[in-house]
Length: 306
Image (tube, rainbow, N blue to C red; front, side, top):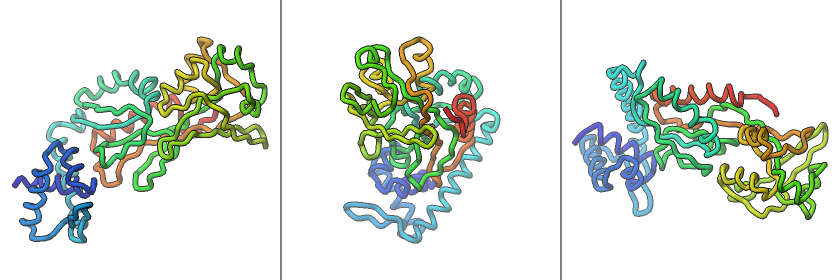
């Protein structure tokens, strides 16, 4: 039995709650993971996991052992990275997940500089607007817009994205220019709606001016769950849409979008980095997160208002 592999397999089963999911994330067969955990239990002469046909739960002894195992695995990772001079030249694979517009417009254009600085870090970047399960999908960290509702994660507030209301000239020529946000609810107007990842419901938005506050839902001909598709729908003239300014700026400058209700304000969208509390923050992960923070200080610093 390779004790390192056995401890890693045990830790991943605890984190995912499943031998099958643990095997998938470790790129092993379920049989191999099962055998490694059984061999570990035999060596320790302690039952670490309670298994049923439906789920796997860690025992009291297993929970204590797990806390020691993850510290030991973290120490081993630090030892390996220090031997490979990782303090100055970090290396290895990072699995991250980021919103699609943020990846396309901010992160990926800046990656050549990151790669030049840390050429041995390999990024596996999931690009989507869905909420991934960090543990089950073995993701090191995520960048997410909006409040983090999963209280089991460690979340760091890294930016605030200003939001304004926009429409394409083709839409305004067809439906008219609304002078007041309430007109968005009128029968001739349409919005492009964004579907929230959790509840799969269309998200309303709130505008404020002085002491006046208005919640807008509007009627939509299209609702999407992807930021790039959302922007494309607005550019195609399918309706009015609130949009983070970083997504709209180039199109505003080119005349492809028009900003509406400039004397009204929408709350900025908070941007977070999140990772599991029991996941070791390796040198490469720390450097990636620091890089994201640096980018957000330029594009959307914390506390920035529209």
